[in-house]
Length: 129
Image (cartoon, rainbow, N blue to C red; front, side, top):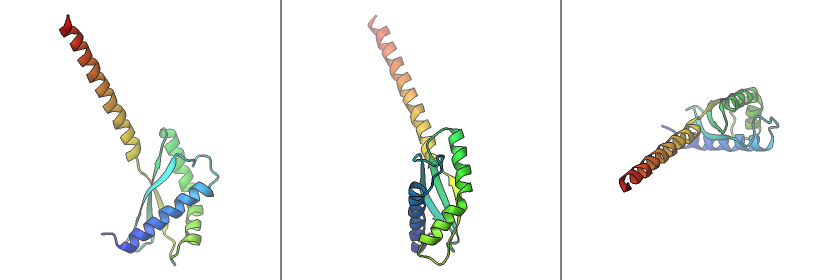
């Protein structure tokens, strides 16, 4: 069960990381199509699982994962400077694919609906003859 302190710290970590990504990171791979969705803190606040989302193909997602892990120290240092805590958590970046999978599911549903409407229109044409 998450404590109030853990949830507040998670919100602070997500806000700081998002601002850092937007304002201080110069890596073109980490552009506007990357967002930090959620942060989950361990009970002792020593570890932060940072869930991120990437809009793009598999190649783009792999490049973003590498860049985030490469910039791990930079992000942690920024957290240390800006957090109101004596402990700077270890950061663990984890890709959250639910948004990308949602787009795929939406596309599949739209294809099925279009095929169903097409079949229905064809059947109406046959009935009229």
